[in-house]
Image (cartoon, rainbow, N blue to C red):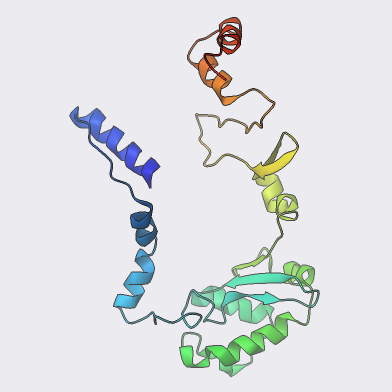
Length: 214
């Protein structure tokens, strides 16, 4: 929120020549991120109760499920066309109980049925069936598994810095390259900043020797 506010204020200053103070509180940002849920509540579509709503694990088509191997998969097939693909791939097209997708009264029973279906196969089995379809499906990956997932590997979503796996910088730009993460013991952020503004290696070394920078 603060970064967005700063960019907006800079654009305002460049346009008008006037600066301004940015009042940014984490509590305000947290409330703002809940705007959609507050909208649902205002429409009578969200109950102030845990685990009974569309996006808080109340709906059978928006939740995580255990597989036969104890690993998990996630489902988010809200739109009817995606829900239809999920039903087809899970072998549930002929079950009329699943026809009333948006009726909360049937969600608990349908969740039990769907849980039983996912429990019949391993996570990898379900990946083979549901990945690369419009079922809005994804495996739940551990921190060790996520970097090796084919999608993340092709995207370069994770990088290694100082022997530590971590997320790569994002977002990416067509004209401005992002900076590869560095860990302690490698070139420091201070050195990078000073080099970028024109200080030579010798001057930077002298500043460090004199204790001017760390």
